[in-house]
Length: 150
Image 1 (spheres, rainbow, N blue to C red):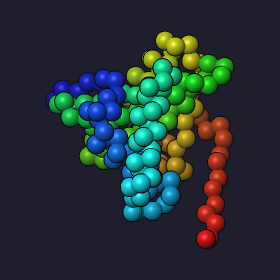
Image 2 (cartoon, rainbow, N blue to C red; image 1 turned 90 degrees about the vertical axis):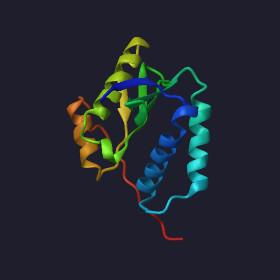
Image 3 (cartoon, rainbow, N blue to C red; image 1 turned 180 degrees about the vertical axis):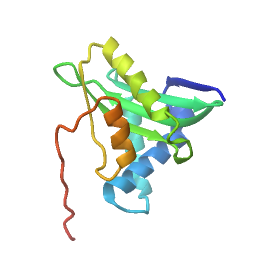
């Protein structure tokens, strides 16, 4: 099995990016049905942000098939960056792909002088929380949310 990491290509990785945004939408909104219009808006935002020199994306390929992606934004003051999204296909999780993606982003951000990286994770995503802790992340803030009935 051949594994490689390359820069994210919207053209080549659009399907994986759509799947990642659909999963993020469902997790964020605590729903099982995806709102395609919201996913399309998210994809358009990503495509626009990729035109910036401060927004970075990488894709992991296994046997030339995209199986994971990560985005990071370094357009923050005081040498800070934010991991905006990380996604690995469910069939490829627990195979060190997430760690490889984060380490690749760390390397790029260090080259660019970034000294501090933040990310957000859903509170019930224990596998992701354990991954981030294993990579040296610490809980610094707790963000809470409440849905208001319509």
